[in-house]
Length: 449
Image (tube, rainbow, N blue to C red; front, side, top):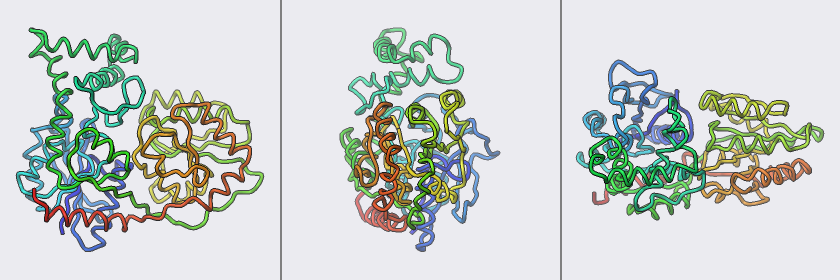
């Protein structure tokens, strides 16, 4: 079987959860005797290539790459449905001749890919890794920082997220920055919605922006209907898509993890407890919450090791360094993927303080597989993996005081964390996951399109 795996970006320049999932699938499919090809993209603004498409191999995996610098987004609609990319996608699919297309993320390819695959009669399946299919910011986080359930009837909550993103973007003017504040976002969205219906505004840029955002969920829902099957790694993600109108059969398949699963060594009795954070350093990941909590713990009793890129959000990173000044916080940067077991050997408890709905983050599963207990915020998508007091603990999302209480309880009794080493585990491998995904491929090839 020949499978084309479409992902928004890929190794070696991009190496987070969705890219890793795509890599693991491709590697296992090749080892199982199938043909797997990755189709990735270069984001507009990244270093591009002379031709719109290029080819390379990464650890034996063939990769076709579309350079979006040649076809950048002109309007908001292009971020989710870009007709200008149709011919490039068609040419690639004709060249690859896949039996199945598997989409692990549509960003950069957009829903036009689904139309092209349908026109070519290629069965298409998807793995949902975030809320791109119905949420403007992909995170189900409202403009005021609260958790969201999905677009409202007039999409004014989606418009408010656009107002916030525009005001917080590089080069935004003073008025845009003011309107991006939580107190003004939703009000501005309602004004935009009202103005786009006023004669004189209906054909202007404002109306185009409002219409592109308002039509987004419906356009994506129509295109998503062409999927033969959809995979969701968590029950919460599945339920969120169903609640927002996805009609395609959804199967829960948890991610697999390849990790040395030997016992975790208990550190010396006089060693400080080591908390860790691994991942993107960005506001929605809650790194600031973790540092605020850590600052309140007794000096000398524990350490905090933060692994992640320091250039993703320079202003946020500068804020974190100020918060961490004078504390036992180490910013340790990024590391090669094969160094992950060493990193988990160097921490006793992993903290994932995310503000948004995480969806089975691979770092959580790696922690469990390494017998490293976790502390997670109480957002669906993570809590279904945590058995309180057995493999970790849960704290109230965004609540620094509650996180302090949980961390303090472990600092006061390090043996509490060490006892969890034996009861913390995650057994599923990427090979087992791939075999389940293969069943989806086989069923999709016999299902009616």
